Length: 510
Image 1: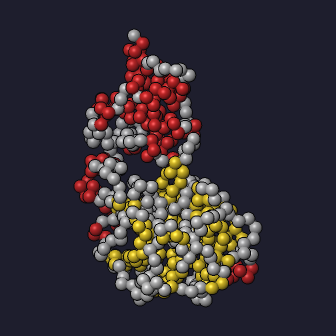
Image 2: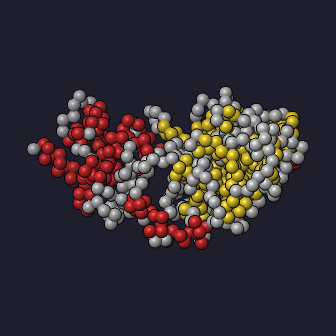
Image 3: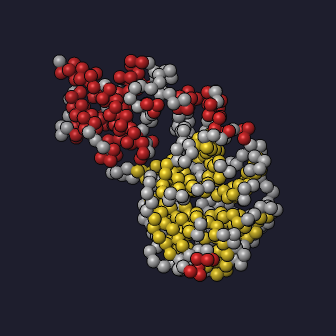
């Protein structure tokens, strides 16, 4: 599998007006000529605009659409978390959410003449829902699975014939996947693959299922039925709100939302790329040579030849409007990574609704991150002494079975506890004092020796990722997969400062 690179799009990549920031939108490929984006949510406002990326001309435009429904407006009402499926030059849309309402209306946009039509379908009509998932079956049918109807999670399967406009609820035999929403589905050969989602009662799932009996050949020979697949390799962590894009022999999964924590659950967002290799039939991590975009869910990701185009999404705080390419390392766009630092800094992410200071806000920090330099800034004066750190002292007293922590020896008991701890054994309450002690050790034993400027490169124990958590402001910003790395760096720090710590203990004892 070829190594890929993430590259922030440049103004020189496109002409025309870029789409507005949003999440919960849909984006479908119309053949190989264009990608059509519809709807979404930004700042609690649902939108219904159509924005098109013309692949052949590298141009963005907003078509003047015609056609309306019974209420007189052009096109569907504003919505997000709906389904969109492309068949030939048509984009079919069903359901979604607008405000607090789940929708059950059905629309088609003819992208040759940019005309909307509200469709009156018949048969087994699906209930109103959002967070469902759907895929094209051949060149005339759509299959839809699951979703949330406002009262319960769904596990029904509907097939729509786009020629006759008849819906059929599929009667599925055998084991049925748990109900869910926020999952993904995609057709591979004659099977519908379904992954992840949020289940009834709220758990995030990481299961993979295949549904047979959807194509015309299969219907005659096979009873529709689900099979749970357990594939070898590095499977993605459980998540919902992710995307799956098809490219050659691979299915590429990116991003999504999950939960972390052992004592209490908290939200985490992902920015990893996991590949389902259709040839070897196993999960793989996509090798990338640089840092990915910010973690997010409810974004879109579409294939553009050998490239992928990522747009929008939400990370629990901010709605994104950035566009990224994911390209093979030999792609001409990848050469942009060798740009001058000033050009790199100019390509910073832009977010909608992000407050100043929520992220690495300064150009210096961004530059340090892009150049893989440890960005040790001069905020180390704010790191307080061990015995003044109330969280550390309280935790040390519990670990050492003492009412009061009196000196550095007692704190050392806690540090020894962390030295022998595995990532799986650490509790949520330990993360904050661990993070602050990690930052304290960097400040005292590293910056004090070599200075606090961007010329400081690798510190000799953690390679090019040295001190990657130094500027994390609180443990709540840590993701689940950060914790093993934080603990490993902390242990390396303790090991590298063992002589200094022993001297400190002796001085206190005297």
